[in-house]
Image 1 (tube, rainbow, N blue to C red):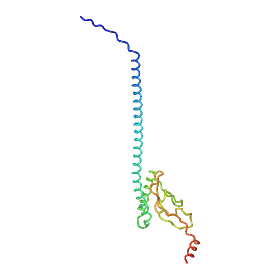
Image 2: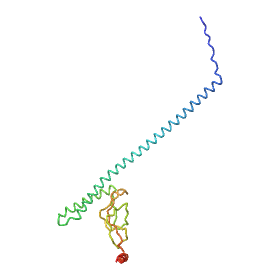
Image 3: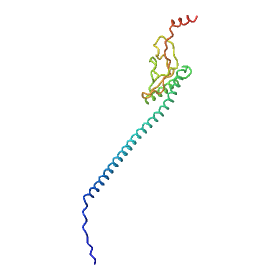
Length: 189
């Protein structure tokens, strides 16, 4: 029978330990760099997700506002038509109950609009503001300052501090001065 001799393991030389230690340190450094890269990727992905959620929420809100605005504008045209029709009905043309009923319907429509945050823009007597008013005519007058709204052609409305429909108005304009007109006609002769 053969005897096998078992030799004890040779101790690793100090130079080998340093090589293994350097290699382990390099692997550890590489693992730490990868960890930092993955953390940065995860943070960017998380930030992208948060930004995406905000953007989608804003788009949904804008879509709702847009749909609400469309419905409110169509309702306002009905309110305007009903108001004009009521103003033009001669009292003797219809029974008193009909006129009062239509007035009540108009009042209810206005109440619904107010409950949705729609407010009429007060224009008469105010200085012209192009954000709230649309000038459809000028009227020469010396009774009020130039640029003052003297007549409202069509009412304007705001919906929660945003102009829903600008008021169509007539704006005061100073009449031409007679002296300047006389001087101009004298030179032409």
